[in-house]
Amino acid sequence: MTPDENEKVRARQKSRALVMGLLLGALVLLFYGITIAKMGGN
Amino acid sequence: MTSVTFDEALLPAHWRDFVALTKPRVMTLVVFTGLCGLLVAPGHIHPILAFTAILCIAIGAGAAAALNQWYEADIDAKMKRTANRPLPAGRMDRQSALHFGVGLSFFSVILLGMATNWLAALVLAVSILFYVFIYTIWLKPRTAQNIVIGGAAGAFPPVIGWAAVTGDISALPVALFMLIFFWTPPHFWALALFVKTDYAAAGIPMLPVVSGEVVTRRQIWAYTAIMAVAAMAPVLLQLTGLVYGVTALLGTALFAFFAFQVYRRRESDPTRMQPERRLFKYSILYLFLLFGAVVVDRWVLA
View (spheres, rainbow over the protein chains, first blue to last red):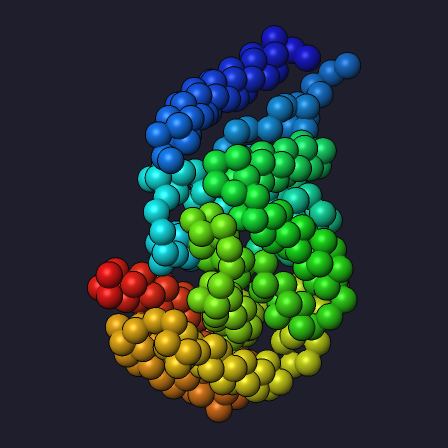
C-alpha cells in the first residue's frame, strides 16, 4: 500500500468507528429508557 | 511493482453501504404497517417499549434484506437495476454482509423479546426466516408464484406490532396479515409489467417472463378480487367500524377500477404503460390509507 492508499483506509476506518460510537451511545440511551419503562410500567 | 490500481475491495466497506444493504425505502411500509398493528391493539404499552418494538421490526426487515442480498449477489450482478448494490458492485465483501445480516437478525429478535414479549419476538424471527429461506432461497428461483407466498414475509409487521402490545394474536391482526398478503401480487406484478427488469438474464422466473404479459394482467385482476374480500373482511366481521368500512369500500373500488383497466389492456411497450404505473403508485397509497383508517377507526371508537 502506498501512503496515499493507507490514508484512504484510515479515513474509512475512522468514519466507521465514529458511526459505531454514535450507535453504541444511542443503544445506551435506549437500554436505559427500556429499563426505566420496565421498572415503572407495572 | 509499478502503477498498481488500488483495489476497492481492500478498503473496508463504507458505513453508508451497510445502510444501503438494509433497503431503507422498502422499510417505510413495513414500519408503517407495524406501527398501525401496534396502535390498534387493545391495552397499554409504554411509549419507549412501543418505539423499541417498531425499531426491532425495522432492524429485522433490514437484516432480512441484507441476507437476501448476500444470497443473491451473483444474480444482482446480472441485472441492471441491482448491479450497483454494494455486493455486486464490489464495494463490500460477501462475508461482511452475511455477518451484518445474521448479527442484526439476532439483535432485533432478542431485543424485541426482552423489551416486549417472546411471542412478538417469535413472529419476527419467523418472518426473517421465511423471507430468507422460503422466499429467497427456495421459491424465488423456482416458481412464478414466488412473490405470492413470499409476500407473507411482508405481511407479518402488523401481527408483530399487535403481539408486542397484547402478547397474543387475534382475528384483527390476522385479517391485516391477509390484506397485505393478497395485496402483494397486484402491487408487485403491476411494477413487473412496466419495469422490464432483466429477470430472464438472471434466471429468475418472474410471472411476466415465464407466462407472458397477458397472463400477468389476468392474475393481477384475479388477486385484486381476493384482495377486495380481504379488505372488506375486517368490517364485515365487525373487527373495525364505519371509518374503515367506508375507506376500504371506496379505496378498493378505485383499486379495482385501475386493476380492471390494466387487465383489459394489451401493451408491451413500457413507455406507454401509464395505467400500469398508476395502479402501482396507487397500490402503495391504498395500503397506507386502509391501515391509517384502521387506526383512526379504533381511536374514534375509543
